[in-house]
Image (cartoon, rainbow, N blue to C red; front, side, top):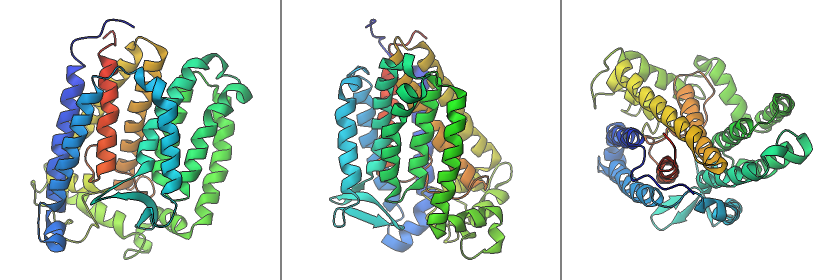
Length: 366
């Protein structure tokens, strides 16, 4: 392996810390009213998110100093552990149900979401597989299908919770990695047709998913039911205008937009900071994507390249889906906004992932 750089990508570090800092401020701003009403402590969610951020930052800086090819040796074991956790979370008494999904395992006063960590473990394992089987990836039966076998097994377990959003992010991320590795477009087209049929089947199998599609097409057809969340989100974004109502001045967080500190936190940000604030955050994500791509292109080996592609793709797919949902461009699904949405598993996972990306940047010829 080449000699390690003394420092990671400085721009990448600044962007990550900037996103995290803005996210912590927005979690407090979005959650203060609800936290004060429910827990008699306006800082309830903010304090917990700050704790998650500290744990995540410690993990990020630790992982940043762990040689990234170490994960190649541990990827299989980590994947097996995540599969065990995905099965365990489905067992009553172990898995906790929230908002209709059995996706959490309680650990003391906190909970972890195994599907979040499966995303990163799958990226590590798939990067290893693509590195050793890149020449066969153009073959449908010997390369393309085997690369997807474990991905769809994990997707199936996640759907049993059910958690379509997290499963979609994982599958989308893995598809990008396989495409970058050199898979044929024709194979993706065939898989896409099967995927559309499967997606329609998943929607028809669960009435609430059909309700989300209906509310997406016309949210005002059921403004107090399935269309309520997206309508309240749009009511937040619209009045924000160019400069916003001012930090802390959101109206929709006063019990109009449900749990605004989670999936719809960007709507509160747009309401309070306006188009300028919302665009600035998107610019930071774009800068993160650009620096991540540079790291992937300049990594010293294939494993480092595929690993960097997977990490930056996971973040990009998640951001696009979250912003698309909040702005009404795609149907509502439970996807957090990286570094912003309240949630320990999501925030910790993202900081661990970018820690790996930062370590790759120490070797990249940038």
